[in-house]
Length: 412
Image (cartoon, rainbow, N blue to C red; front, side):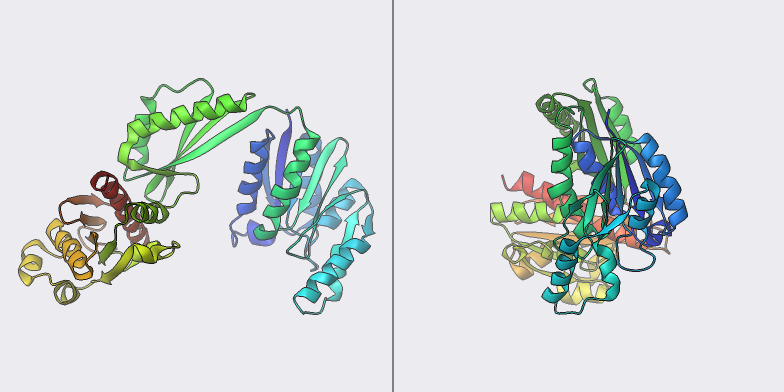
């Protein structure tokens, strides 16, 4: 088995000031080619701590990936510490120096003297050329172990991993056929405990695992399988995905990198239908999400943020009788918000949403969402837990999922 270890370097990571997205990306890439990642380690800009960690990593792992600490400043000590741990001299690379110098010429800024430090590479290392920054990565072999060092900024690290490192590892281990395949499915409007109960009813094929992960007001399902026959594994995951769809129906809204607003926008484009939104609790978040999608102007006509009863009466033409009798947070008020905004903007669909975001009050988290067309309507009443921000975000996502389901059933 080829084992992998990921070491992330930087005080900003160890202190929690920056989210470590590099480790998850590297792990996913290594796993996809059959490298079994056993360790994730994070260490600050401390040469002694990094030295000790490198010594233990080389003793137990086949592939060691180190990210961060390749910059020009005094606290960037990764390369020097690695050279010390492996007892390798650092050699000046004229080619790297010229590349760094050209980088600064292109951005029309002078190169500082300390950038020269970045042109030193451990003896025998293979350079992984950085095309968008000053710090190139490199890889080397030591006692039959592969050790890789990469720059910390994600926009610089990811191209080096995908374009240079992964092809190298594939070539290095051509007979490695121990694949791990995974797929993430996304659920909304259902709790983690209910999801777990439903999963227990499923008959999974041998070698397939499903792990639920609570994420805000959603649950992500991680499907995973291991084996040697990649095509067979892909087919198996597809079969499991279909069974998950059967169990969770409308709660399953997407997979992997899908975004609800992109799915809804695409649906409306395909069906050639338009939308208008009347928002209270979400304060314009629904229309904001949709306008983040390219081409939204083809489907979103407009929106009204009617936060107060005054705005509901004067902007959305909702009568005082309705607000007095049913209150501002009700199915009836949300229906009139949806129906009236649709008429105001002459759109095919309207969405109206009201609720109590808290943190004070007796019904914190209660929301009403109504979707209308000229012939159909759909209503969701639910209660969301969490902070004010959590409730607002969850409400916007639930409204988008309601739109998705309404379009699927109404515009066939």
